Each structure stands twice: as C-alpha cells, then as structure tokens.
Amino acid sequence: MEIAQGQGNMTNSQANIQGGALETAHAQFDRAVQILNLDVGLADLLKSAQRELTVNFPVKMDDGAVRRFTGYRVQHNASRGPNKGGIRFAPYVSLDEVRALAMWMTWKCAVVNIPYGGAKGGVICDPKQLSVRELEMVTRRYANEIAPITGPEVDIPAPDVGTTAQVMAWIMDAYSVRHGYAAPAVVTGKPLNIGGSAGRNEATGRGVMFTVREAYRVFGWRFDDVVVAVQGFGNAGTFTALAAHEMGCRVVAVSNSKGGIYNSRGLDIPRLLVHVREHGTLPGFDGADGVTNYELLALPCDVLAPCALENQLTHETAPSVQARLVAEGANGPTTPDADAILAEKNITVIPDILCNAGGVVVSYFEWVQGLQRMYWDEADVAQRLERIMIRSFWDVHENAVRRNLDLRTAALCLAITRVAEAMQIRGM
Image 1 (tube, rainbow, N blue to C red):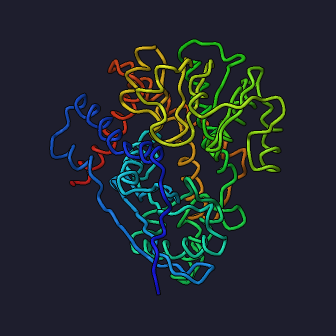
Image 2 (tube, one colour):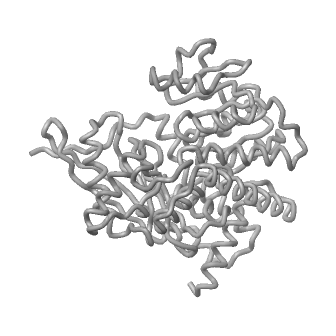
C-alpha cells in the first residue's frame, strides 16, 4: 500500500511569510537581553525550547489511501506553570515557526502575569481539503501522539489557525478516553456544553481593543470616530472588528486570505458577519470596494490591526503604513526592520505579546473553571479580562517610560525578567 505525505504544497509567498518567524523572535529577544544585561548562560536557556516533539502518523483517507502526516509540539519554558499554546493546522507549518510561536507564548503569559509557560503545536495539512471524518482522524491521531507530554497540569492546547472548538472537543475526548474520565481542563477553546468558557471566542478581539483604548488614554488622544482597518477575518480579526464597532470606531476595511473590502464611510460589521455566514466570503458585500491584503496595510486610518499571520509588516510594506497606531492582533506580524521603519514614522506599535493576549487570558479562565467545575457568566469573564488587559498595558507602559523604550521592547523586558526570576528562584 502506498503511503503519501499529508502536507499540502506551500506557495512561495506563504514560505516567505512563515520563514522568518524564528529569526524575528530571536532578534526581539536579543535586543531585550542586551538591555537587561542577563547572564549569558541564563539568556541561552531562555532562548531555547525546553522540549520539542516531532511526530509522524498515518491516517486512512476517505478514498482508502493511507497518508502520512507530520506534527509538532514545542514547549518553550515551564518555569512559571504548565505550558499553554494553540495548535495550528496549515500547509505551511514548520518546526521553526512552532518554535517561534511557543517562545512568544512564554512572553505573552508572563506579560499578563498568568501562571503559564509557552507552548505551540501544529500539523502540516490543509484542513479545507479534508472531510470532517478525515479532520477528526488527523486530530485524534495527533492528540494521541502528543499525549505523553500534555495534560491539565502539564501542557494545555487551544485553537489556532485552522483549528476550531470542534477540534478541541476531539482532543479532549481522545485524552478523556485514554484516561477513563472526562477531563475538560486538558484543552481550552472548547464548546460551551463540554466545559468551554463564555466569552472565549470574543476574548482576543476584545483584548486588542482594550489595549487600543488604553493607548489612546495614555497618549492623550481623543477616542472619537477612530478609523480602524483589520487585516485578517478569522477569530481574532472578526472580533477585533466587532469590538471596535461596538466601541464606536469606524471600521473601514477588513480582509482574509481571499481578499478584502473597503468603505471609507465605515462597514456595518454586524451585517457583514451575517453576509459572511451566508456566503462564506467577504467580497460581494453591498457598498464596499475590493482591496487586497497588502493594499489594506497602506490605507489611511488611525488604527491598523494586523490579525492574520506572521511577517505582514516588513521593510517592503511598513513604509506605506499611514496609521498612527498598529495593534498586533496576530502573532509576529511585524519584522524588526519594519519596527524600525514604523518608529521613524512615529507610529506606535502595541506588541502582540500584550495586544492579543486576551485569548490566553480567557483560556486561563476556562482552565480554572474546568479544574474547579464551576463556571462564570460572560459579563464576569469580560470584566475580569478588561481588568487584566488594562493592568498589563500599564505595566508595560510604565516599564517603557522608566527605561525609555518602545512598547515591544518594554513588554519583552518585563516578560523575560519575570521568567528569569522564576527560574532563578526555583534554582534552575
């Protein structure tokens, strides 16, 4: 029987987008470490992942053929608590990308001061090309392969690009069957009726806009008729746009992998969500013109929210940015070269490890609820999230003022210090 490799063909543009994630993460880390003057050995430990797992597993497809799939799980640093991080199903997944995302998760959890370390996982596949049965089989086989290093007190996965609440339900079930009892705390981002948290879907987008509003407050800008452009219309982008709309902002553009739409007078986001549910696409929405992902980055706006993939703002695209504020709803959307260009243009960047941390904050809430078997309503979740995001923004801002740093470097310095202190206190 012939066994075919399960990965899809990655386009050159996707390879270029994903290829620099680890280099970006390391460059950001190196700059912060120079400022902190950390011990060389400690810095080397912090830069490296504690554990990396690569798995290859077979899945019988609907046509009877058996395909080999490759997956990864990287645990970066567990000094402050169990590892936490999403699972990504995409054709372009690579070990280096997962390493970068796991590192960013460590810093993200430390910035918002929740007791987690950082992890990330992925499977090389195109979920859009899989049937529901095939997707379930890929998920369950991957869950069983990484089971030795996951668990409610060890490593708690969550959804990411290409995965959903249903995927998390399958992972929870695989773990529960293996151990003989229902274990809702083994994953977060689950459906509500098996232990998910109210407000989890909205958390990342709400957190993005909480930090945007707080930035306007601290810089003395009027939060009135703020013009917002959102690149990416998955979970993070959808709820960033919706939260911005609910806060009275004018969302003029949104996009996804198939293209975007633009209306300078503003888009009716609730009506757009209905359009996407009915038609499955953004183009064709009444009263809006077409716009590409890269054109969106250059639109005149107050807030640009890149909520798609890594390395969207580069030395090629950053010079065209016209926003006064970049709110990073995605992980690693801005390269170090682009950071320098945006700084020269006096454009403030709210870094990913702060800006999009709302998702992991509410994942933490979901984990706590699952452990306690006691659940909170959405208003309680939203209030707790807002309090943590505001506190975290001010922690970063005060660190930036004290050290005369940009927000990204200040956030990294704060996070690295917290993780380093945990390692030293525990005795390494």
